[in-house]
Length: 284
Image (cartoon, rainbow, N blue to C red; front, side):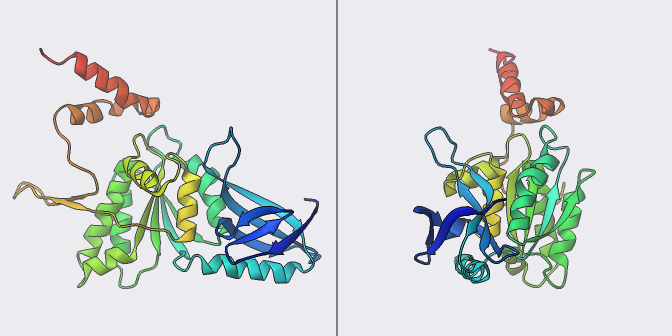
């Protein structure tokens, strides 16, 4: 890429100016000098601007002309890291290719992996092949003597996330301080399923774009987190307790969810059509 005829001016610790354009330091994921040291490659993950653009973040790399590429890159990196003291170094990524319309693998490769690469986050990727795979892997992770991951990133639907949460809870329960272990492993949900209820709730609360996996990957890279409540359902002696992050459903809502399983190829539309069908069939 040809160097732009622009000078990078270091302003405050919160922003830099490129040809009069303000650039938020928090959006910078990577800065490295060009081979000739006359420029710096800056990779940002910033929200789009403009009257017709969405607010979702977009990953972008620009090469800018500066007097000392190495010194500028070092300074930008220091400023960026100062804003992200809790940024993860290594995460476990659980991808469910069968979730929703089957686009989870593509979502990870297109939207999530490039952000992690730019932010220098090591990712161990597990692609599930059957129900229970995610739960078993996360059970082993949580029960290990030492924590090997800073967090678990789920690319799938609420069902996959439920397996991850239950696996972590089950694994942590074997330790002397299960609550401490659970607090040490953060969980992120990238939309790759049908409803993606957890993702939508967190995105809405954080001011992010619902449905944007890039926004989720950026939040992971920056180490942003919030508390999430869990509920424990007990069924007496008939079956073991059930840990969940969602409310329990029964009646019509459960019928709509379970009755539309065979129509996952429709995406989110499957639950809408199923709801109309079941409502029309209700006895008066």
